[in-house]
Amino acid sequence: MQFRTTAALTSLCAIAALALTSCTSPGAASDTAATAQTGGTLVYATGDAEPTCLDPHVGGNYPQALISTQYLEPLVGRDASGEITPWLADTWQVAEDGLSWEFTLKEGITFTDGTPFDAAAVQANIAHLQDPETQSSTGFTALTKVESVDAVNDLRVRFNLISPDAALLESLSQPWTAMQSPTGIERGMEANCQTPVGTGPFIVESWEPQQSVILVRNDDYATPGPEADHDGPAYLDRIEWRFIPDAATRQAALAAGEVNVIDNPLPIDIAAAEKEGSGIGHLDAPRPGSVNRIELNSGQTPFDDVRVREAFIKSADPGPGITALFHGAATQSFSPLGSSEPAAISDESIFVTDVDAAAKLLDDAGWKPGANGVRAKDGKKLTVRFPVSTNQSVAAEQSLFEQIQANTAQVGFDVQLEPIDLATWHKRLSSKEYEAVSAPYTKVGPDVLRILYHSSGVTPAPSGYFGNHAMLLNDDVDALIEQATKTTDDAERTQLYAEAQQLILESYVILPLYDQQNHFLTNGVTGVAKLGTVGTPTFVNTQLTA
Image 1 (cartoon, rainbow, N blue to C red):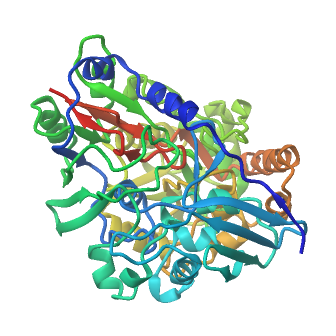
Image 2 (tube, rainbow, N blue to C red):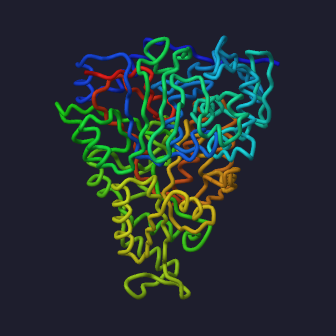
């Protein structure tokens, strides 16, 4: 079997320089001017939903990615420029036919419970991700083309694929496919959810639900990733990972110096942090993959009629709301993909607001004005059920949805916003009890289009989650995405994804809004960096300042 090498070694110094650049802001500069300390406890306050399991193989949502980045590591990384880099694997090769990949693993690495990191460990992790009993969503859908994994020898492992997968390295760089101790996995889901075991710079010590997770330093840390600026262990002794749902409370704790890092700050607090002399650092880390968007369920009435979908989009007019509500922290998008994705295309012409045209489209589709301005057809109102996960949607976004509700009402839509918790939201989606939904999805690279818009995306993963909420069934989109996943020619792959995106936009199944927001504010700390994969923070370089 012939292989061609694709691994690219990157200068650690160059990467570290990029990491430091990414942290620069007026507030951050004031932190770096203070004296950095070794040791101590960093307090992190998150506004994302508390994970139900600390093992990101189970389910696979962003809150799990945030925290598991601190104790688990993937086979490969991705630097700030988007280039795939070595991590737990040193090199990799793909066969000429694209049907197998071989990885050479770093030598002498052990998980923090003493279990060796070797080919058998990689086999165990992929088997864990693909086992329906694991109830994986994100990791499972990322690895659907992996048929089996062979241990060539202790430090060499071969992935055998059902068909070529140009996105395999991107998929293996994500926290949802990161490597865990097989010994830890063998304890069973309940134990492994409490204290998953990895090779990362920190170790899960304890978890008090609805309060905090305590992470302690891995003194034997030996696998610095793309953003590490030094070899060896992290500088911090511990991290206290607190769950504080209320944004104002998180901000107050940060300002008072009770916590050092917060996520999901209010847009107005981001703007304040950017002012010179604020004393607060700001790290902007937009997530890759899809943009935040509203998806219209084309699988049922009324959005099974493209004229009705187009009418909704022509009347929604989200631009002014984004500008006013996000205080410059978000810019309106006209693409299915986030701006950090090089393959993203944008077509603003599709999303021009035209209320008169929207009304005519509804007239043509047979939806006539009725009582209280709500249109009706065959005795049914033009109702749009819109469940909103209050665990995932920030206050500014919910206000934006209210504005869109009011804008579309002008042409006769009855949008019913329904704020609900995450578990109820998942149930509503799985039972198709929605006409519109906003569901963030993060994945490295344009392969996220396969999960969100390929016909296969309507089939649920073992967890019950499915990605194609728009219920888009388009043979041309399917063919383009399938062809893109099989080619390793970057230019050809980018062109195929561009054509697929254009068809998706022209189908009027999505209303792009803005990049998935990922902002971190810091106080009394330096060296907070973001990974180039899914924008999660890493604290391997972090020091408290006095």
